[in-house]
Image 1: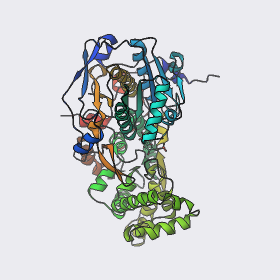
Image 2: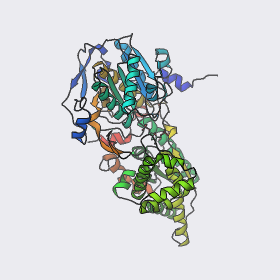
Image 3: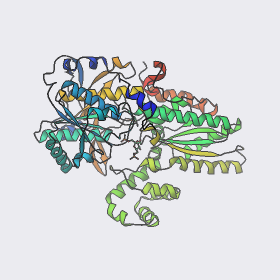
Image 4: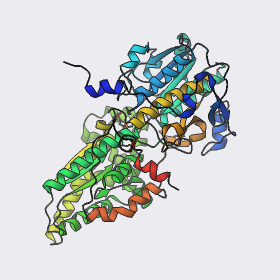
Length: 553
Ligand code: FBP
């Protein structure tokens, strides 16, 4: 029996495409520096916090000589946070560029995420080992984890590990928080007088790590294609049997990019965008009324079925629940020990209710018990509630079903309501990367090495022009401080990369708004089918819909 699937075997042979400048001999690539930069907010404070690395220029590549390119190097790499298709290719791209420049150079993979650095657990990545992971999904090549490296002591331990292994360059593949910590580590190392380079790579399926110089993070394309295929399949199923309303929650933590992208690809009857909920200050009741309205209108056409997409982070954007969650986060952070000593849910909820403001206590008590419990479970390492574990789809379904019952009693609704709930999240995070993500991630890794070879630190690898063919992509580097501002974390102001939320004035959202009323009532589903890897470019090289729309003139 084969222990590798046929697709995996064929994907091993895929050669990721590179931007034109990276097709040059690696000894003939150097950098061009732009103007000094400023952070997106809190410039004065950030300038003080990042004395050594603040304000560095944006980098692009050009033909030319870098005298240091062929130095023998030991480089470390770590995968941080949630899986995203393409992670293995970042490592493969980094490895190929590193060993092309000097075949004696070595790449070490820290195991199990940033804790691998703190505990000094790493393996040398050999060509044979890397080959068995090329163009595959998951992060199992070296594993990942959510440990944060953020305290002075952790920075010192990291520095110690790197020095002990004679690693002078570290590549951190992660989301906004991991890249923030990459910037902090880069600053720390410089302040200690060490010559080391720390480079970040933008990873997350959530799509919220983007900006002027980063079109999108790797993983978003592959994950949204998997979710859209599944939504399309569910839509076709319900359009066949015509008996269920499907409430589908989609991963994506805070921002609704995934939900918007899937809506643009599949044309559901309802797709909630958290950023709009926040902007219009919609209450939970209003959201329920909106859903009910569509269900009632469709039932008047004899269509007692439909698709509702719900972004994972919605709960935090509903004003009254958002306020409750902020209070809970603070309360649980400040009284962690006492709270953990309360053993039963009844004791915990009684204590919480006593300590919340009147409004929040009212909201908390009015939520169903399972949701109350989910709001009290362990926080993530940033002190935030773990939205993927809150069953918002079930909460909405319960409230919608109660309201439909009331309308039925009042004679205002004559339809039938049967439902199914789904949570699409983990199914999309470790699949084979699309050709786009395979090329993009590989190029990001290659790019990371070229930044290292220039001695740059505190930079994120950034590739622009992604809607164009790969040859026309513009690779480069952006100083991480440029993407930062100060935000409150566990009650304290901390430097963080500003999350990119769905732009309500952007073309992707506006396109959705132009069509959503029609999709609500008229069944207009689109069935994207599965991701294609082999065949015509119009099928295998499709860019994310939201990216294409945003890039239109
Ligand atoms: P990253 O921000 O680390 O890329 O993770 C994204 C994500 O997939 C979110 O969409 C989701 O809320 C979260 O990870 C789930 O975390 P976990 O894997 O710890 O359950």
